[in-house]
Length: 365
Image (cartoon, rainbow, N blue to C red):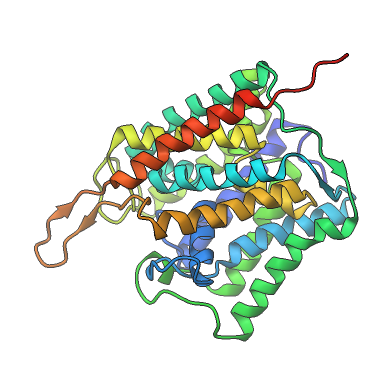
């Protein structure tokens, strides 16, 4: 099962992932979200009470499926390898930064592409920031940035993250300990089995195709290589067709129900933060989950950082609000980024620069 030996296979893999996202949207996931790593990690963190935003609390089976899908396929194809030791605490911080940037924008790179395919012009604006952030990270790589080498470790270390998500699944299915939203985005979800199966399929394909939204643009800038971009293009085309066919394609900015805002500068800076931090961490939020599933404890630390980052965002009022319709007056209320979120975003960018230019490869003696 090799998807990386041709652009056609990679594009097909992306198309299948697009079909999974479309099906989940039809089955109950928020249509404008369908499949969003940042949003789903935030919801899962809320289910454990890490934050108290009642409208975004639900243990998303898709996150569980992604990790397990990557784990199962990597074991089956003998690509599983337990590694650790590449600046885990810095990766933890980068995970927090990625989540803060994502919730200032209101979505991860995957959701950015899905929003773009639905006509959300705010996502197209944010793409500018995402590309610039990755370009900044590439500049740091060229200047010698490195978080150090990861070393092969005990196989049990790499199984920790898959074991944790299995535990989450058991808690969700067999107990009432986890919180679940009764209104808002957290209350909108596909049936558990469909979500889990969708996550498994998406995770397996993402592992075999090396799908990474930051990596695709990084490779274009660094090597003029469009292989990984083929995966993203396949997903985008399928979602575009789906949105047009179902009447979900609405071209515009302030569109109620899309869970987006039109503060262009902060859409750009939010995704600039995500692109910069993801390049330094070695992958976008999706890629971090996949790497954690196939044995990387360093990627697992980044994932833990994203969970903590989501809690920080909602506990300290950093997350943006989306444009909405006032139920009583029927007036459109524009979404916005709170002052706390703006300050946090700037601080995160500064921290990224510090990390980028104070962690260098050792010069050969």
